[in-house]
Image (cartoon, rainbow, N blue to C red):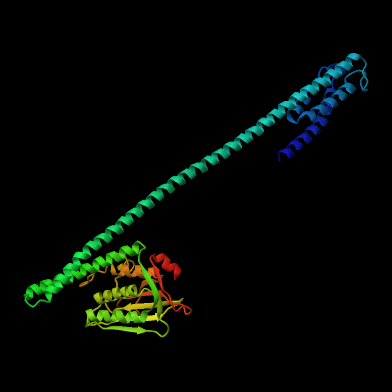
Amino acid sequence: MTRLRTDRVLQIGIVVAVLSPPLLTLILARFSPSEARAYVFLYLGIVASLGLLTGLIPALVAAALSSVLADYFFLPPVDTLSLASPSDVLYLVIYFATAGAVGSVGALRRRSINEARALSRTLGAANSELERLYREQAASARTAVRLAQTQQQISALRDADRIRRELLQNVSHELRTPLASILTGATVLIGRSDITRPVRDGLTGIVTQSRRLDRLVGDMLDLARIEGHALELRLEPADVGTAAEAAASRLRQTHPTRVVRVTTEPGSLEAVADWDRLGQVLDNLLVNANRYAPPASPIDIHVAPGARGTIVTRVIDHGPGVSAEMRDRIFERFVRDEQPGAEGTGLGLSIVRGIVEAHAGRVWLDDPESGGGAVFAFTLPAVPPEHSQVETLVSDPATAARES
């Protein structure tokens, strides 16, 4: 681009060098030859201007052309290129030399100006680049500081989470040991025949509350494992229909008057699951349904093959259902629908969600098909037809999700 611009300036300079001296000559020709000779050095102005603005070559062209025109029109004999006296020859030589020198000085001056402008542009570009590099360096420094702060925060959170889990495990262990002693001693005392009825009733209350506290400690420990991604799962083919029948039988033992109906759809109901944890999920859902459903109403468990290689299980009660304001929070920790006669810690459904998601499944509150009640549904990955044996020990829910 710069080269093209230089060539264009040179071409314009040559055109001006060819046209300017004749134009000046036409002006000077209006004077008498003696007066015109006094203004001949105006040609030097043209030469100097061309040298300063367009370079040395146009200046030399203008100088040569001016010499010829001055000789022809103003130096005797006029209208010829011959000179009458040696002084005129010397005069013409001095003029040409002076014109060349002036043009050279102008050209050097122009070159210096162009080099200064180019240097200024280069310095401006360098300054812009330095500013850009400075901004990038400053941004990198800020990013590095934020990264270091984030790493410190992550480390602090990891330490806090580790301490919390260790504290919860220690507390759970320290609580369960005396609770076991209390339960054992109270149960033995209840079996004695020499205690009075008030004492027996008091011991029964101690046993009931101790078992409730033991369940709370167990739930908190399970929740700590789930949130710490330390829940161990022994994955194997498990028939969900059989697990539902077993959970229903366990609820009937503790609540003989409760009707629990299990229905299964045709097809394979084998899921990739930990049998004990699957039973814990069903037990928690049944206990929750039994807590809120009217005593005379049945609880239904429906198991069926689902879409995309899953087994879908629904636990349906015929109670008042879940209030609208609780539907979005029902699976959170320590959240429960406050209804008359309702008990519980608010951890059961949160544990259900953690265990199901650790199996790469999903749990949700479904809409009842007719009437009231609550419908809790969850999915588990079905056993692929080509795999009949699955047995893996998993300690991280994320790993379970990936492997399933």
